[in-house]
Length: 196
Image (cartoon, rainbow, N blue to C red; front, side, top):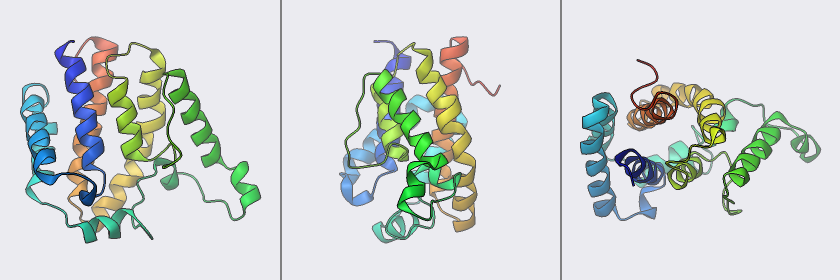
């Protein structure tokens, strides 16, 4: 297994877990894994490493996580919820743009040999990152399409909300986006940051 694949698998798995509720993980174990990811990122993307370090330096309480991302969230972790209007009725939900987006995501997941559980919607950021961990190293162009067309364009509205909340999760989003772009750079150019 190449270093890029290992970094992708573990990197995406750690990022996915960091986006989940703090009560759903072993904080000590997750911190060690995240610190190892920082060390890996320092070799190839010091800015991503610095962003992740800033996030880790400002631990988030469960109450803040819930306020930001759960129940009546100020910044939902559902990518499409920031870009598509919510339907007013159940009938409109079936033909909404967001529903179409989620159906397309499910099609991409299935194409890549993955089937999400019914616990979360397919545009839930931690779920998307978990799928990227499972498909790290795949040369299937559909994986690149997933990142380029179904994830990256949906991050700016989340960034705006996190900035408005002055949340440390903005640093985690920076690190996440840099890892995504690094992944694209590795797939399209054989390595490096695609923004360079």
